[in-house]
Length: 521
Image (tube, rainbow, N blue to C red; front, side, top):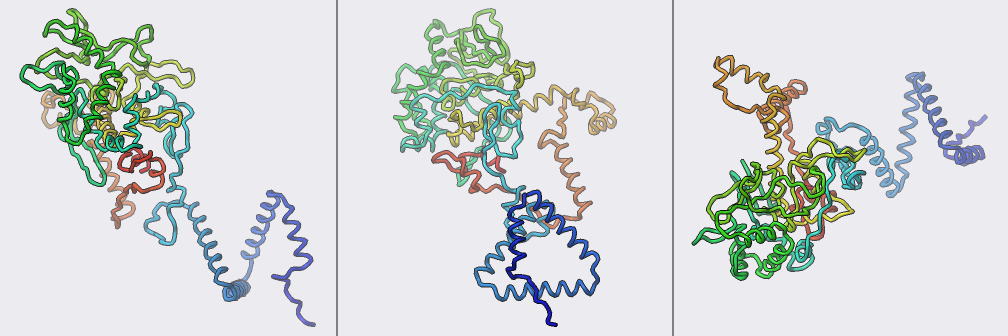
């Protein structure tokens, strides 16, 4: 009797019925059927003998070879693509730990979920800031605890100049730091300032950053500088003086900016008003560090409603953070970093209306009840809130390119100063006297008085000796567990990544938005 032919690959009545039944089954029925088939196949393969297994594997190889020999070029290309896709799907489910030691050049690692950054489409429910999916929830407003008023749109012509849409505005943005230097009211200084104007413009400071302010009027036979230029009697001479700071500035732009600042900057208006009422040269002017708006709670952050500048009267209470300006002398005063006008005096292009910056009278709010709490807003939280991207409001600070870079560096120095001050004045809370190096010093010298007023930086402060020591110990631990390293890998950020380029404003380059580069990296 002849052997019955196999029905594999043939369209029979039973196979058609089976295909019809499978098209009608629900997803749950399909999952149950496939799981049953897996269990049955696993049971049969677990109980098959070696000879049966050899026959099955040989038969599978023979059929696969015959099928591949008969396939067309397009079918082969499709099969290889499907195979790569299956391998990539399996790899995306796996961990990338130690993947560098098993690098596969055929695998596209950028599609792995641990590598893909995604779009900036996560919107904070409290402040409406846009974030990447894996960024922390409290990055923008500490989960609703920080609430600040929105940015005020700059007046014309500054609004057009920062747009970068016209030839004049492109020139302005290219030299924006020089234009700001023409109008700044305080001097900017640091222990060391490093500037790189190559393919990736960079502004760095080393050491301590400080702002200083002088008198309202220069002494005889001295040229006016910074704030003093605003009160020159001759308008043309004032413009000539500002144009002397740089040969690349445009006189017409400086003239328009001068008119704008004299009309909109409340500090300049108040200075001029006080100066006009002064009859002698021995009076002083005060800018309050902490003001209380009329008919408002002192902890509420709101726009200026009264003059911030006033003449000093005998008996007036003055705090060490207040700015005291004389009418005419050569003395200079350092502006406190926590003064509300610290930013506006140095960056009139960023704050043309002299908007308040960070100060100590900002308090957090309860995100549930919106009630003001007794906990202050930190410097880092304040500026993190200010540089966020929001669809419902325009942020002209992000359009200011190199001036924005200088501002960020300056404010980060302020953040670091606040952290250091906290550590300095909370040594007892940090239990600094328990640190082993301090105990060793006392045991060796026998005199605790010889230690002086040394401030111990904890390991949580980045760059401190204890922080670096912890890193060294971690490195030794890795060597002890995995052996000596074979690779020295440096993580860098490519400014051409799509996640960065998609968020650039019109006319911007990646070098203009270090905030995006830092967030993506």
